Image 1 (cartoon, rainbow, N blue to C red):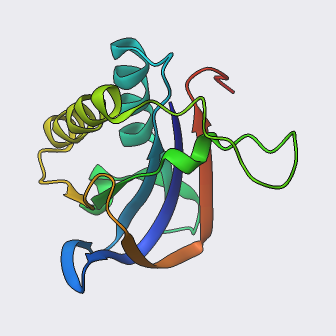
Image 2 (cartoon, one colour; image 1 turned 180 degrees about the vertical axis):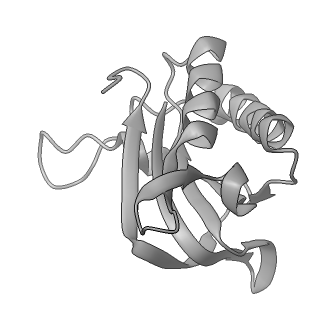
Length: 150
């Protein structure tokens, strides 16, 4: 599982001109799911995301977490995070999980993040042509891969 987490002052997602999810300060997360992902990856990533301390404290240091700022999450499915570009110029997405696996895991991540944060998780629509807008605060962008725990 791969996640690109962006600290935002606001973010939204539109599908066919309609807003499907919108947040104020918090995280806009692109989530990629691969065939090898398990429930353990999902649980580890949800805990890691919600525990990140990347929001400024009174001294401007990144010491506060999502809960400390009453932050929100916009979660967007993003199979292209598993693009392979080794051969040629057209990316291969062979490692990305097919919808029959990815959709249930995406939905489980939504539930898990909601349980941990106690808040509704804003989302896009899985597989749709989404238009995502955000104001990256900092900018602060963090990538996490459950198979490479750095």
